Length: 282
Image (cartoon, rainbow, N blue to C red; front, side):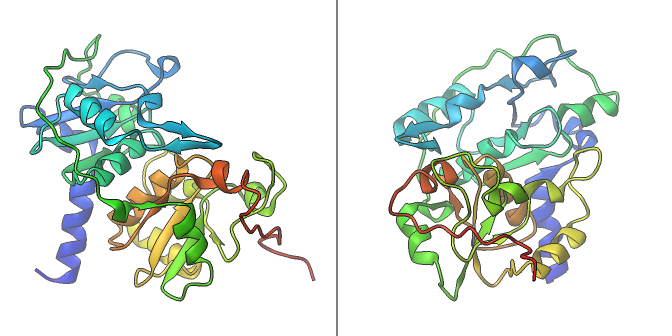
């Protein structure tokens, strides 16, 4: 298989369209819907389990988006009807901002057979595919979470990565958060040396993923080189989990999401912080 074919295969494994999902509904697939109550309109994709986003995160000190314990993750995934061989399709309303947190969690649990429904339930509805009034009743499956620490960066790892030749820290928050204008912790700014590329830049007007070659070109221009280890962060590892999945979809081999993100870094008295703006005036 040549490099182009490998990239295409990777994209097909990690992102799926609405009609392609419809064609495999009768297979060993578990659809997990992460929409909040406010976004539930006219039903659910057939066979979808419902998951509250809050079940995917654990607060430790100031850090808002840490992983639950291995035991809690095992129970959670088992309760969703996910087995070791189950193909998981995560969805939310449209952008994938909630769904990709589940996908990052699965990756951290060493479960690789998972994909994002591109455009979410909105894309499914737009394709005029069938919906059901209620989520599916789920039979728990035996599951054992085997943690993969290579998907996770902690505070020390990020600290050690500052100035590291083989690593690139990626801030996917808004420009104002990066510049320290929009402050959501005790201190504002960004991790020293972090490059900026806002997570939503990967989406089109319909909140579906843009052309992968266009995204890849922008990332390369920003210094996000696939030969480096990329460490995305945001405020609570929701936006950076989205970027984690996008980078994997694009074929970046080494990516670690910083789970503590700015809720940890910006509230730490020992963390170095840079407040220089992205585009300083001269």
